[in-house]
Length: 117
Image 1 (tube, rainbow, N blue to C red):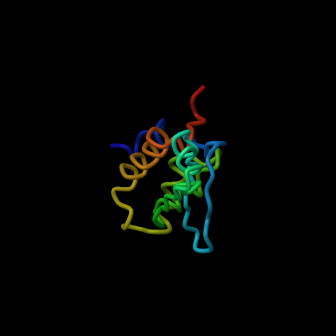
Image 2 (cartoon, rainbow, N blue to C red; image 1 turned 90 degrees about the vertical axis):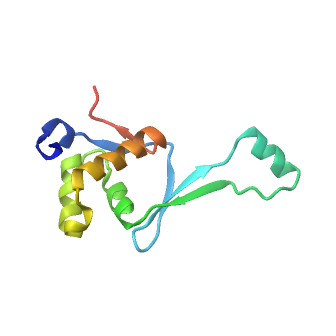
């Protein structure tokens, strides 16, 4: 069971230095992905309205997790905070949390594992 796996619970992530994001007054995070491919720049020159950034807005749970990823809090710390804030709504807690942070790290490269040597 994941709850007893100290190694997993002690993983620490930090937000990638290249990541741009905004936080609104309600604590909701929006990722800003720069759209600066040469094809996008070419079509902008032709007058096409291609936004400078693609905006990806997280829900309240994702935002809560993301804002705690600070290079010092462990997965265990973040899990405890989620449990205190949301109770049973976040169950199965660690399975969902690990899947989410794994997705942020591997799929989007928004965060980096600082626990690796």
